[in-house]
Length: 202
Image 1: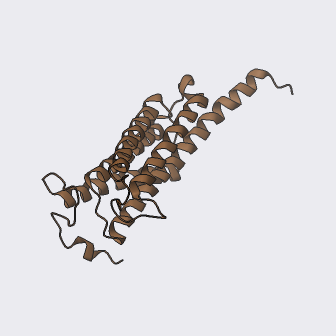
Image 2: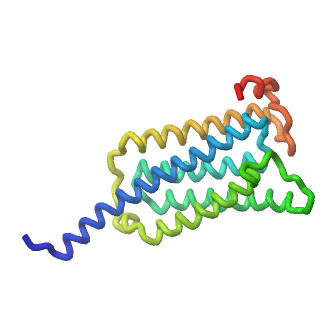
Image 3: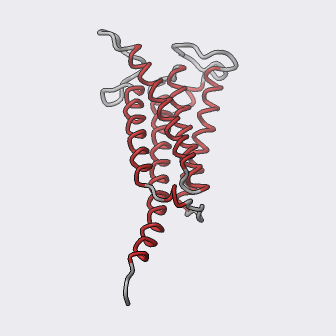
């Protein structure tokens, strides 16, 4: 049986979107893990997020929204655009927070994790996300081929569910922390539930 060049193109074109979809699933799990780690730091160390920290969480949820879009409708430039906007916005906010605490002797905001503060870790993650998304855009053939959405597997649906859950959890915690007023620059208690830290068994 002879193999034509066109047959090879068809194989790579069909396997390319599958790889891209898998990368989107992995990336969504990574975003969920980052937000889960932020929750753990918040409650384990009683480290309430400041307004800039909350904006960085919003940026991560924007990235999650772009990845969910790609999984639901197939890899699209629009989905990657949402990811890039979220990463760029989050990177700007996190760098802003780094600059606020860059002076010698400034202890920074919150407890450091593995020697770096949360906003420094966030800046690094946002930078990696921008570079990784750009690389995917360079090599993703499904975008130009108009890849149609396909049936999602269990891992993809679980990633989508977790992404939606952490988004709702972020919104709920922000409301509990700030109430219906502007969040304080250095929050020390939850406005709507002052006893919340004592309810967490850490």
